Amino acid sequence: MRWFFILLFVLGTLFIACDTPTDAEPTPIADALKALETAYNNADLAAYKATLDTDSYLFHFSERDQQDPDIPETFSYEEDTNSTEAMFTSDAVGSIELTLTLPEFDEPAVDVNIFILDQVAYNLLITIPADNVTYYAQDICKFELTKIASNWLVSDLWDNYGDSGGLCSKSMSWGYIKYIFGDDDDI
Image (cartoon, rainbow, N blue to C red):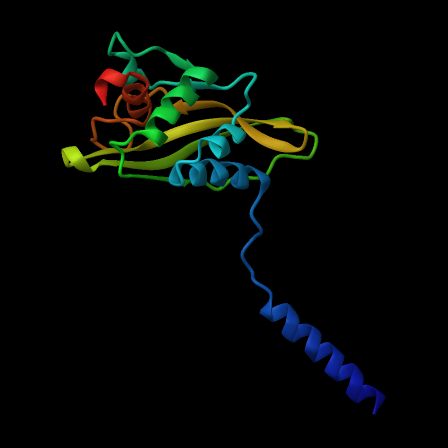
């Protein structure tokens, strides 16, 4: 009888182990970037700001965008969040949809405080219903994240860095969309 209970225990343990999801748990880096994506999709400025390192954040425009003499090399935290606020609160905007596709990567060791995630694909759609316009950007970007008090925050974001064409033939980039919302005359 004792063996019977041991066998039931072993089989029950195996059943529970087989029922456990095999997908890896989200990582702190993936969670940080998912929070940025969710903030965009919900047009939540406070949540967006919470994903950024307020002391050092820079948005780096692509080389392609910088060919326009009016577009700077970078947006500071304040310039970026002002532009993003204009996007999120604009009466002209119908919807915002950002999708980030992360490449495979190894989570940094516990003692690492800066992490760079390269080759992150993005799709960004912003509809302007009154004008029957959709801003669409699809390309790649690179993130530098900094660990501050156990939280990973975005300290730098490079849009389509070092490339003049990106992954698609679209003429618009994430940076260009940020730029036009930062310049009220262009909306």
